[in-house]
Image (cartoon, rainbow, N blue to C red):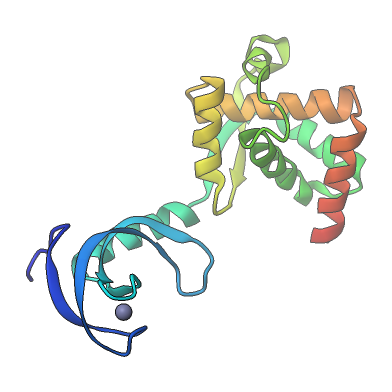
Length: 197
Ligand SMILES: [Zn+2]
């Protein structure tokens, strides 16, 4: 197998142009065929004429596979038992069952990572009494952008560990939904609940 480098060129069939064209190898974000996401920075052959991806070299397939696996992998963490109770109570309050509890966490991670809900004071929750306790229960979340959003949130909050970050998110949920009963967030979550049931 010939290993290709960025900048290499060759003649190849371009689907878009429906003819042989000069292609140049370069790093591109490649969308999945079902448009459900993209794989970032993959070496591909780009048509010099129409700028569409004409060649996906064999050497790029392991990178694509790895990224797919990362995106589909679920995220697992252990937290104190009372945190699961908080999520179940919050879900109950919204009118959802315990199976909706994880969606509240995902909603928050999403909203906090793009600042729809301010992540400014998230780290402070880790100094509170409710952050303590042995981590004996498992939180398991699945989502295509979850890892990206968590990384973003780690950067903003300076909370390094995923477990700590999840703990602080749960305690923020406790504060917003159970303690302060914030109307706007509650209403948004009720819409999510209505849409998923
Ligand atoms: Zn072309």
